[in-house]
Length: 435
Image 1 (cartoon, rainbow, N blue to C red):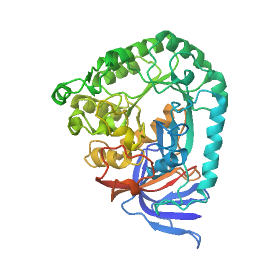
Image 2: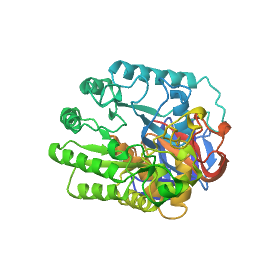
Image 3: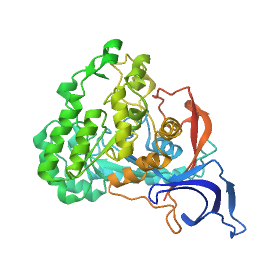
Image 4: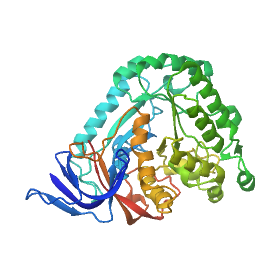
């Protein structure tokens, strides 16, 4: 099919473009990008895209799948449909499934499952009429660093690399620094990204909220910022000693941003990411005791949020991750401190980030789109294509003004653990094209 998108706002962080163009797409490729395209075939579908935005497909660095093991939370199909509905064309899932993604056999099984979902989707009439033509995103798998992500015994990293994992991560803190050092030595020749979540569990103890005045006010056990910063400092020392490039996940404090900025200035081979909710909300939001605000790491104080936003804009924090973490209704209906930490986000992140960061002019559209597309791809050792002729059409079409309500029938994800449930949002993905 050939499509002509007329007068669409092209946001391309690869080419540093934010302008109105006509875009012609055919056979999975961008055929032409120009201020006006008149020479088209008679069968071309013409779409008036005034007010719409198109950019490279969004890339999620890390999220969680319920399948295998907890399909009531999320299946691979619902996860990928949710990602497509949120504008993502590539999704990378962490290995903390049940069983964990710690062996080549499970990697092959999940890759085959994804191919099966692609074939099955062609037969399914999706519930939301806006998306039947949207293909499923590419699925990448993080291979576990340790067996059963238990932090004790290293997996066969070379075998996992040969099986096609995108990189290595447990998605959980690794407290044995001798093991971390050995892993950095082993992974170096494999040429795959490795991601760590630095967190000192002894310092965090039983805390559920960032230490500060609001934690005292709400009567919730606090987690000091040092639980994160001391672990980051130790990680940076190991990187300096060994030289293996490392990605630092889930950065959530202002002091962490300072440490990472200093390390980058010194030439250490590191990248870093924060999650979308840590850019939008601070500890004051926990006043509601909504268990979807129980995150790990916890929401920061207002100074942390300001530092994270500045860090993303400056490139100190390379990417925004979604860290989509589905849980069933029953799992989340508990006291705040007892509920498992995490929230969904694949279908919500782009609209909310655009509304609260771009429309307020704190971020430019290019800055936000870069942190959600080309930069996370680079953290994975990948690239996204510029929006230019003869490039693959891996794209996201977004309407910043369309309103919709967050409710069960408007979501593809099987879970509803989000503080925005029942609320009206502005901004909605119209379509994705996957390479």
